[in-house]
Image (cartoon, rainbow, N blue to C red):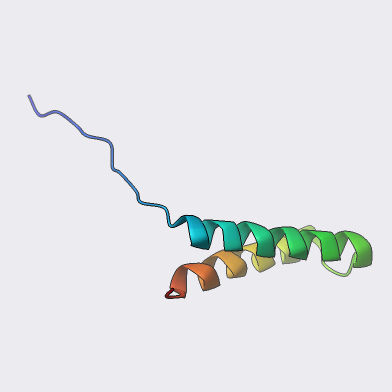
Length: 57
């Protein structure tokens, strides 16, 4: 019988905190301006996450 170990993922706290900050800023800005639709905000958040993951600290 083969035992399955859950995959462990290391999370860079600096990147995570920067992502959260950027997402909150985008959300706050959109609450004020209402210039982006829900779909556009989803895409903005996806881009923030992708950009932050690519960065090297």
